[in-house]
Structure formats: structure tokens, C-alpha cells
Image (cartoon, rainbow, N blue to C red; front, top):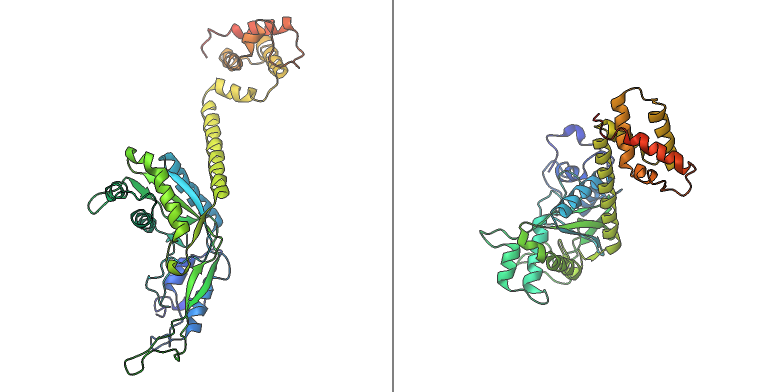
Length: 364
């Protein structure tokens, strides 16, 4: 239909760098004429579809953030995730109503195509009931995936692209459109092309399964196997009977995502550790001592405790506590050293150990 509420936008174009292509595609179609018809003009439909195929859709930063949150939630709940890449064109939301006849499923916040978690669950259930080998019993399927009036043991997150997506225009050609009893269909009828929007091959999506209850943890590997077999065997989305929506499990990208999550977790843990240490005087000294050589620490002990460069006794006690936390004074008392390259002699190391020990009973 026309854009009666958005007349000022009638001649504008989608700015893919900042705009939401899903909102644009669903709400701003302006290919209809004033008599509320599209005149059966496939070219006008195709022109509208092409407005979102000029460049990749979705902001990379938002997609990375969304994927990271979803996958971290999955792992925190003891779930399993996998990255699957489309091997053929993928169609999602084809049955949704739209002014150009065929709809498309856009993530409302991210503006990229997605597969709702409910659709993923339906795909897995269909595979478990009809194609899985060995075939699980109906009772087991209902226990794991639920039944009318009863929740299942696992949950499925929406499958979302992990990077900006390239969309393409495709076409289906019904050969017998517009026929009537007086004008029956036949091979002599001209084809009527119907364009529709698809996701290009080699697009990676993240699929996640979470346990809803403790009893489901042991079944997750089996369920993930059903998901993988279903995506590779029958596909997801629309038109799977003619080869659309086939996915393959991408082990390298899955491992890469896990490595990124581990790195992010380690970075956050390190930030939290340093933040906690900054809360106390001895903690701040411990941070200062990190990365110092044994000779450096021995020199700091001489300056701060022997020369008492730190005038405040409480601060000196905090410094001594931080030095003890390194474990070095215990070695120095015995005339030993941790670093073979340390140049300070055994006698001086013992003296420095005594300086540190003088503050053992001092409470800052």
C-alpha cells in the first residue's frame, strides 16, 4: 500500500549505514499506484526488493554484541551452540503478509533476517519424530520438547546472523496463474514471475540450545545432533523441498566463537581482579609490583623500607604485605632467589627479608 503517514519519505531512499532495513522493507513500500493496485507488475515488485540488496544489511557492532550476549548466556546456562553456514539460498518468513506479496522475517531490533526460536524447535521436533536415527520414542520427544499444556526440558534461542548479511532477489515462476474454468491452464500459458527476497549462500548463523531444567543437560548433545541433522538434511525456512535453506555445521567458526568468548571472559576477569585490588593500599602495591624483576623488588624494599622513602608507617606496612604476597621474602630468608639472573647477593637478600618481616604484625 502507499505511505499515507509518511508522505515526506516517499522519494527518500534507505540509508543502510544507519537505517533499519527491516522497518524500511515492511513499512515504507511505495510501489503501489493511486488506485491501490500493483498492476501485476513484477518489475515494480523487484524494484522494491532490490532496495535492500545493494549492500549488506545489519550493523556489525550490533550483531557482534548480540551474538556475544546470546552465546555467553548459552554457555552460562550449560547449553550448546553452533555456527551453521547456508549452503543454498535461505528464505525466512515467506508466508508473512507484505505489499509485494511475499514477506520476509526481519529481526525487529537488529534489522537482519533471522529464524525464530519457535521455528528452530519445530524443525527439531519434526526431525526427531520423522527422520532421526535411532528414532526416539514419542514419550521421550514430548518430555524433551514439550507437549500441549506441558513445557519441554530445553529452550531454543533465535538463530541470528553473526555478521552483516547479503540479501538477493530470487524469482518463482508459476506457469498457470490467472486461469479460470473458461480459460483452463495449459502449457501454452505464459509464465508469471513472482520475485521474492532471499539470504545469499555462505551466510553464518548462530544456533543455541539451553537446558530449562537440570534433567535436560544430559540430552543436549542428542538434541544438538537432531538440529545439525535437520539443518543439513532437510533445511530450514521456506521452499526447503526444492533445495532452499540447507545449512552445514561450521566447526572452525564455532571454535573461533568459543575462543573469542573465552578471551572476553578472561579480559573481564582480569579487569575485575585489578578493580578489586585497587580498593586497598596493599592491592595497589601488588599491582605496582606485577611485572617487576626480583632485582627491582629488592631495590624497592631498600628504598621504601630501609630508607623509608614512604613516610607513612601504615603505607609501608601495606607495601611490605604486598611484597610478602609475591613469596619472595620466604626465599630471601634462606639466602635463595627465584630468578637466577638476580644480582643482589645472599646476605643482602636476607637483610631485605628481615625488613619486610618487621611489618608482619603491623595492621595498616
